[in-house]
Image 1: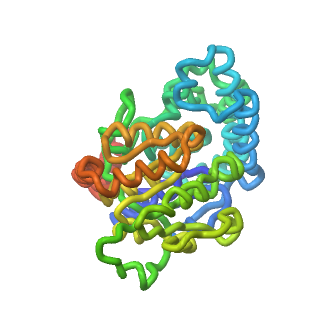
Image 2: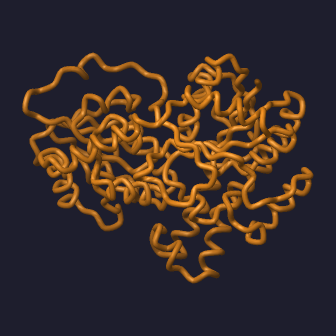
Amino acid sequence: MKILFAPLAGITHYFFLVPLAWACRAAGHDVRVAARPPHDVITASGLNVTPVGAGYDFSAGLADAHQAIQSELGRAPTPDDLRQLPPDVLARFRETRVLPHVRAAEAMSADLVPFVRDWRPDLVVTVPIVLAGPLAAAAAGAPLVRHLWGPDISRQAGFPGLGAPVEGWPGELVRLYERHGVEPRPDHAVRNLDPCPDSMQLPGVPNRVPMRYLPYNGSGRAPDWLRELTPGRPRVCVSWSVMNKQLTGTQGYMVPAVIQALASLDVEVLATVSESDRRLLGDVPDGVRLIDPVPLNLLLPHCDAVIHHGGAGTTLTAAYYGVPQIVVPPVTDQILNADQLAATGAGFSLHADRTGTDEIKSAVAQALYEDGPREAAARLRDEIHAAPAPAALVRTLEQLVREV
């Protein structure tokens, strides 16, 4: 069987696909990844890539859209805005946010549709925000399966192709589908593979197939000193997203505030900070070790707590290892991830726009020294581990292709 995986531009969104892609490959199937640049993270994962959609800078378009919405709103949007903003304002914001995805779909489909007509995959697996996915599946005559990556906020926000009425789609997207002879439908996917645990997922995901989250955070080498623990002194990991800084600028880069908050606690701090960002930190207190980014699945098993921005990959990796989390999210989807995590008791959600060092320090102390967060993190870990592994779902996909 030929299986095409089609991520978009986000590195972590691709990382979510790797365990299933390799499970399919190990089961004897021919696997290809069709993706926009950069491609080094894909080839580093050991999978073959077909370049598509290189003509549009999606990251820059997304950053421009985020800044436009934030300028009009006067702050970063929150999940509450989806329920509270006037319908005309919400519709305008939604179209602004979706436009970069439409542009990416136009660029991707120009390469992707000819490729699938030639290669003829039996199955197309994509992520929620790839609007070219239904075009690829239709061109191949193959079923479309969607791979989720966390709480399904894109569906809640009315993102096209995730159940929203076609009448509300941007006209450019409708015309793109029509040019390729594909009838726009509210949802083209026949299944939603979901690595998000039940206790964190939003209700209403259709055709949902639960799947165990397996951490793949890229390739790397564990530092030799990582196993050297100081007895009685907890270790706290600090991790932040590069993409977040592109969206929010330094305003949403909370690492300096986090390090300041930790300075008065008797903890060892491992802060993954790139060389280019270290100038933003100023003087670093004793007890803080600045390290180049390392795959979190290597770091977190050796940590007692983690502070991060709320990306789904970081959130679920920490949950997989049962590590209590302090999340300081600056943007909408990450706020939702943090709130859903906090509802399980396994972490704390401290919204970046109203959080200072005292709140961070208090949450870290609770995560380290109170039983509740650790016990809840252990329950969430056990819930994740109880779900079927990606390898167990390969047969489900094979059966799906036979039946469709």
